[in-house]
Image (cartoon, rainbow, N blue to C red; front, side):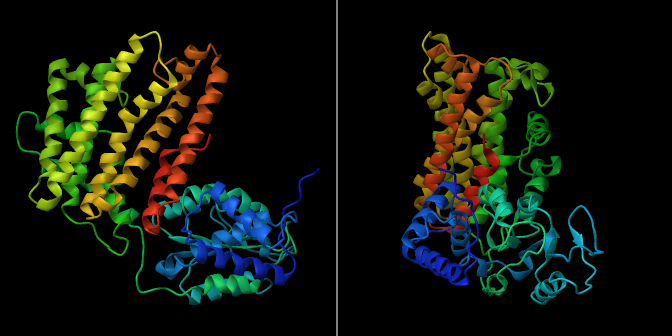
Length: 493
């Protein structure tokens, strides 16, 4: 039997019925955005079945409408000037449109021959920016850069389907208005749907994730002057500052600041005590890299001689140990509230113990003839999850919400760490005895492609487990942040 072509209901009454049913489902079920594609498909299928519309090709339309209903309650917390109205090229009058276009999109001449200038004027009245473009490929990047916070998009069903995985992975708040007909001419849309989407009012409480502020704060902190302000003047200071500033994206400190910001969505600034906390997280990370290079016998880091090659083994060990001590001292910095210090130090100590156990377990397993995939996954969790966990814990502690979120962030970090390492294993170009691919080859006598396919399956299972866990999160700003973090760390394979 051939697959039913997906389409938008042409009957306005059916579209209205689906919309109301989707809103009722969100209210009654307590579903919170974002919803990953697997869960969205399942709920949309149940929705069409309950309306006796299954089998008619409306499943993808129902997904879009359900996603709209999920985001609609969150839209009032997004400033109007941070909501992008995204319109498709095919709304222009064809043939005969004389408008130019650049790399971003159409440069409308407002000639009045199509609906674009009218819609643009309406958006302008609301202070909403407008983009007329062929695709939404740059939207997720603009959200991450802080240029926009949400999208109201008009597009054909096919384009919306293609953009869904990326938009969901990036947790972009969006309300989509599908064109009633596919194709690139004589297109039209339900004007009531677009008016409804554009007219969602702005609430007094605004949730604008401060990407730019976080980036600037962390970038300013990790300069020689910024770090030196927190490192005492001693014989290791110069090398410690170099280790903390010379290379790397300082991703873990940004996780700490991001977690804090997600838990304080209405706050427009970052507290001063977050700086030593974020710096401590990076101290631990850079110490682990120095020690890892020694243990693994790696001669280079960031394309340069590794620390132990440049300074000598003893000096590198001392520097790594010093950075660990500096991290604990920074957790107890004078600016950090006293009630936070013990929790930060205790959780970091636990993470250090797990990291050391992960390294020891890996060495032991590599010396044995039997090294199972279960052992491999355990090592992945012990070696990688603690770094994510400390960064997230530090943000939650700084926000005063650690107790309620500890278990969630622990489970999230474990799953993210395992998934990240499995993905990293797939990227290995050469043999690596500790990677899941090589372990599966040895344990089962498989060729590389078969072992790689099984590693992909394991990766996807871990990734799907992350999104299953996130369905338990009722705090929308936190859920958005963890979705975006997962999408940033992981990739679809």
